[in-house]
Image 1 (cartoon, rainbow, N blue to C red):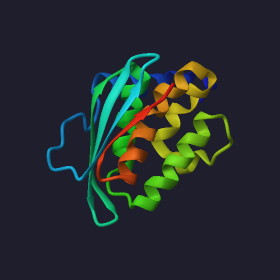
Image 2 (image 1 turned 90 degrees about the horizontal axis):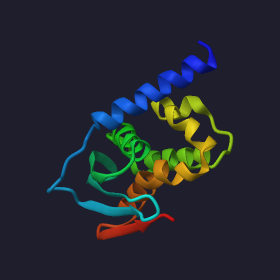
Image 3 (image 1 turned 120 degrees about the vertical axis):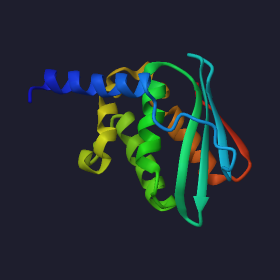
Length: 150
C-alpha cells in the first residue's frame, strides 16, 4: 500500500470516528472523571471511567471539538476498555511520545497509529492529545479533575 493510500485510509478512519464516535455517552455510575478543555480551539470534553479494581471496566466521553479531537477520544475509549491501569498508562505514554514526534513501536499502538499524521501539524497535536491528558487526570483522581491544554 502506498503512503498516499495509507494517508487516505487513516483519514477515513478519523472521519468515521468523528461522525460516529464510539463510547460517546454519559456514565452516571463512573467512579473517576475529568474535564478537558483547549481554550485556543474550543475543544471541551469529559472523560468517564468505571474501574473495577485496577481494570478499566468501562470508559466513555462527552463534549465537543474538532474532528481530530473527537476521533482521538473515540479511538482512545476503544483502546482502553478492559486494560489495567498500568497498561493504560503505558499506552498514554506511547501516544504522547508519538504525537510529539518521538519514535515509537507502531505495532504497540494498534489502531491508534491512525493518529500518527497529526504530528505533522503541530497546532493539531493538542487536539489529538486532549482526551489522553484528560483520561490521565481521571485515572489519577477519584475527584472531578480538570485539564486545560494551551
